[in-house]
Every structure is written in C-alpha cells, then in structure tokens.
Length: 145
View 1: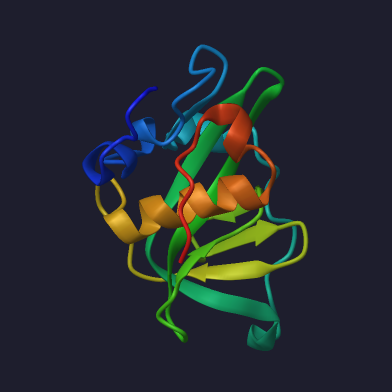
View 2: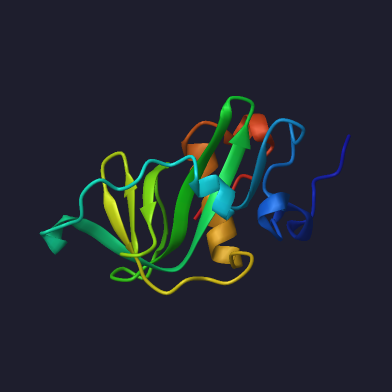
C-alpha cells in the first residue's frame, strides 16, 4: 500500500506545482505580453462605473495552456470582500484603463501582485480547477476551504 503524501507534498509551492499530471500537454504559468496579443481589443470604455463587478488587488494574470490553445485568468484579492478571487477566461485586457473583460463581467485592476502568487491564491486556483472539471485529470491537489 502506497503511503499517503505529507501535507508538505500536497500543498503547491508555485503555479508550476499545481498541475501534476499530463504536464506534457497542460501548464499553468504567469502570462506574458505575447499571451495578450491573442485577445481582442476592448471596443468601448465604460460610462457607468457600476458595470464593474469588482476591483482586484494583488492581481496576476495566469495562463493555462492546453492542447487546443490557452486561456488567461485574472486572480487576486477582491478589494471589497478581501476574498481570493479568480475570473472566468479573459476576453480582453486594457492596461491603459486598468480593466479586464470576461464573457459576462468587467473587472478593475487595482494593485498589481509581483512574482508568484501567494499560498492563498495558489490554493484557490486548485479549487477553481476542480470546480471547472479539470482538477482530477490534471492531478491538481484537492483543496477544501
């Protein structure tokens, strides 16, 4: 019988440590300027700030690559609730106006995070990948909170 992993072994230490199976086909990393080139430009700016769903601080845009391409996600801390937050895939990013657009929502970019996300965000990404149905296939640690 194989021993259970230790807590130290289960907890991811970086984005690259979240996906543990099928790593030849899937990866998770911080996005680059090249990743944004594939997004559509934001066509119109907002006249009504109430349309903005939330301001995200300590944000990072994470890239999930897969055999059919890639998608970008905004993750960070919701300024109002102080909870860890992740969006659905991004459709557009406007750094000049600090806005990102998903299929159904617009978010304002607050303070930018630097480097790898902290443990809370890494754990939240694990939860999201399971919620979206990818977690088991990718060997993502099961996190409950």
